[in-house]
Length: 53
Image (tube, rainbow, N blue to C red; front, side):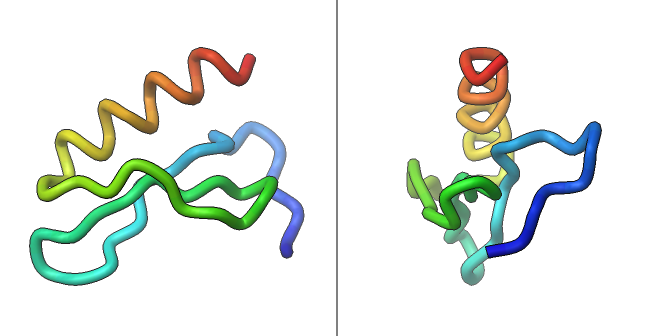
């Protein structure tokens, strides 16, 4: 597990394949919320980042 750079969001979108995206947590190293589009995954990551503050 790597430390996240300061100022970087905790949850980011990770592309696993074509039409396969998830929300990756830099702190725990786990992936959440599988989605079919990058937009949907980004919205989920934004929601999680707002709650993580």
